[in-house]
Length: 261
Image: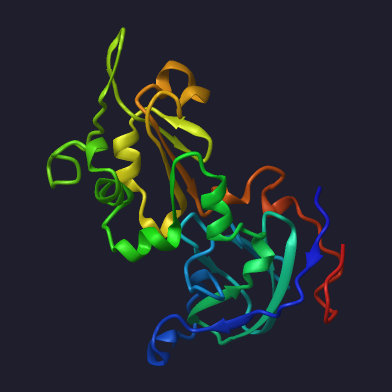
């Protein structure tokens, strides 16, 4: 099990809907808390953050940073936010009986782990690398559309159009025919790469790297002869050594101002 490391930056709890819509008290109905776990700097969703309430209830945000939990007793509560790296910070919330409370828990970026600067990522790349921020600035509907703008020769003409199957195109001829680009997401080769890229939103991507030609895709064998499209998602950039937050151990944090192992 992992040992908790306490973040030095506090957490801010803020509403993610207009104030008038943040709380709807309905006495006699179960209390509901729902919302997002987000990056305090960018405001983008942070996935896989576990909320531990001082009453013992737990919930972990999904790949889009969404969470929802009910049955929390009314009153003042302390909440521990735990990452897959066993870092933790705290928040406090007040809940009224029968209230539907919508909260965005803001998580300090350093809690999730240091991400290399864009310049460092680009210098390490053997091909063309675009950061998640650069993809979001393109305002593409999905990652396949972003790829079309970056490397149009790799994307089929019908990809992304309503009712038409997305496709990737290759120009490298092998003994087996024309080799299409290989798509690798978080280190895993994806069978239907075009569909995977179409389903990935730019907000979910940490980086997109394009390795053109067999010489750049040699690490993937003959499958990389047509080039490789490597995607690291914002969840996948945590890298090796992470674990489900549920395995992280926190000491007696409920009655203390700090956290412990």
